[in-house]
Structure formats: structure tokens, C-alpha cells
Amino acid sequence: MDGLGTGAEPHNRRFGQTQSTGATLSEHRNGLGFAIVKRHRKSGLVLLGFAAVFFIGTSVASLWTSTPQEAKAKTIDQLITGSITPPVQKGPSGLPLPRFVSLKSDRINVRAGPGQDYPVSWIFNRAGMPVEIIAEFENWRRIRDAEGAEGWIYHSLLSGRRTGVITPWESDDKAYPMLSSQAQGRIVANLKPNIVVNINHCDSQWCEIAARGYEGYVPQKDIWGVYPGEVVDN
Image 1: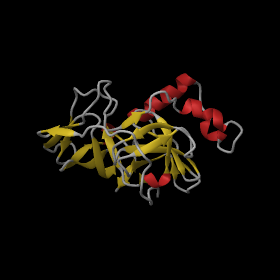
Image 2 (image 1 turned 180 degrees about the vertical axis):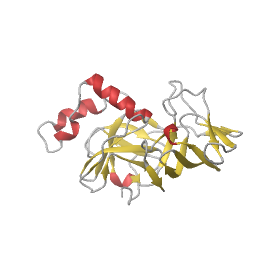
Image 3 (image 1 turned 60 degrees about the vertical axis):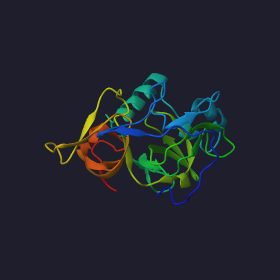
């Protein structure tokens, strides 16, 4: 499983801390509406479309094969909202592709390609954030985050511990109840979109989660970080 090593690459800045008020759990957000604990994009750098040029004619060219732009965008939207379950295959590591993992460190560079010679596209500044591994090349993992952005991370900076993000596709004016039991339980806390939670168990319909000292259940469809119908025992 990814994440057997430790350490991280240098970073250039750290975002603010998260906050909660009462039993409503939320994340600080920046002026653009993104949860600022998630990542910092370096200005002037283009994501994987530019990096793909370096892979034409190499052994990893197949990793960059894409559909037409509109179809690709639609597929990414469906994956982000959890409306489809991607087909599963085995990667070179012998582990399933795709699969969800989480970030091991607070400071992780996401690169444009699988190696330290590639430029840093952005920096994650939050340990425990879920990401989806969608490709493997040697010790590097191509990941997708909850906003659909893709890049490469060294394998030892990833953990097999399962976490999730509550409805990152929704606006902040909504809240989702964490229940004491499935379906008819009392409300333990209200979860705002983009809050990061630890996943303890999912039975394909409901997930038992923990966040900031609270534990309870939410519908599996409201979590990015677990596939529709997937059973998880963390």
C-alpha cells in the first residue's frame, strides 16, 4: 500500500488553519471560493496539458491518452460528484487503479510529471486530504483531487488511510447532518461542504466517519473519497 515512507519536499507558503463554530464544522475558504487548506497553485505554471508534451514517444505515453475535451470534462465531473464508478484494473504496483488514498504530510509538492525534474504545479498544505490515484509510473503516482486537478506525487508521501471530503461540489450555504445512527439517528453535527473527515467504515450506502472529535454517519453519496457502492473498513 502507498505511504510506507516519510518526508516531504520544500514548500513556499502555508495556508491558514481550519475553524469550527459550535457543532457546525466548516473550512476556511479564500476569495475564490476554494477551501484554502487544500492546495496552493504556483503562478505561471500550466498543469498536465503542458507536461504531456514531454511524454510523447516514451514508455509512459499511454498514461496521457485523453478523450475529446468535452467528453473528458463530463467524465471528470461525474467522477467528482460520485455519479459513476470507474472501472478497476491493476497498476504496476499490483494495487487497484483507480483507488483513493490520503496525503501523509502537511507539505507536498504536486509535479507536472513523474520525477523531481518536472516543475511543481501546486503544493498541498493539509495532511489527510483524500486524493485518487489514477496512474502509476515507477515510484510516482498520478493523482486527482476533489476539484478534478491532476498531478504527480512521490508514493511515500501517500497513505492508505481513507479520508473523505464532504460534498466539495456544493456551495458553502448548505450543511449536511452527521447522524448518530443510519437514517433515523439524531443529528450529532452539521457538516459544511469541503470539510475533511476520517472514514472508519462504509457499507455501500452509509459511511461511519469522524471529524474534530465528532463521530457519526453520513450517506456515502455525500463523500468524495469513496466510490459508489464501495465497502470500506479502515
